Image (cartoon, rainbow, N blue to C red; front, side, top):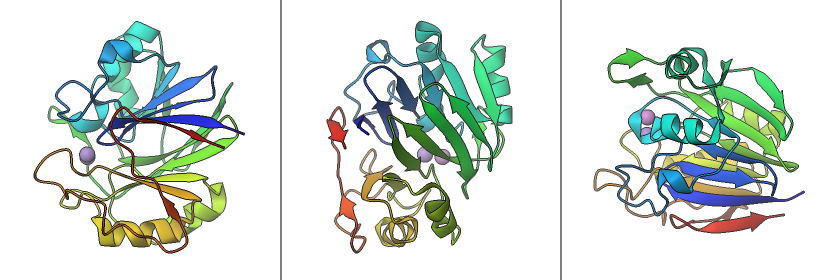
Amino acid sequence: MAAEITFLGHAGLLVSDGSHTVAIDPFLTGNPVAVHKPDDIRCQAIALTHGHPDHLGDSVAIAKANDATVVGAFELTEYFGEQGVKTEPMNPGGQVDFDFGFIALTQAFHSNSYEGRYMGMPCGVVLSLGGVTLYHCGDTALFGDMKLIGELYRPDIACVPIGDRFTMGPRLGTTAAELIQPKVAIPVHYKTWPLLAQSADGFRPTGIEVKEMEPGETWQYG
Ligand code: NI
Ligand code: MN
């Protein structure tokens, strides 16, 4: 049981077991903190929490360059299908099995559009790869069923947005992590722009290891 997590900056990640890599919300072009370029990304699948540009990001180019499958909410995958990209359409509550493990979508309380187009439900992504389970909350408000999601999937790692304004801030993010009960919580969606919280100092869930990652940093879990 091991996975290599690379933080792409903002809310983007690469999760790899050595032979399979899944990108989550790969927003690189126009991301002021990103270290990677779209051409640097090698992956077999791209899981998207929603279609806002700071999440959808470079997904079309990365999917085409890698012949990768885009996994996400139904309307969002319709958009990618129109771009000639392979897709796995889903919606919250559903799970799809892959040769590396599975991806499930959860609810998230947010909005979801791209260039004025409705992109379906905003979601959280549960990714199981290399025997490691990671719950990326997506962009979301706090909700009590995070406790249920934690009980259902028992994530090793949770990626919790803490930038405030568009998502939870550090205080509500702390409660979210305490509801989810992962072994490790990674704060995301902060510090990218002046509009967002600039520090994870207030993100201190009791009894849960907090892993603050720098853009471009890779970390081995397990
Ligand atoms: Ni968003
Ligand atoms: Mn966002």
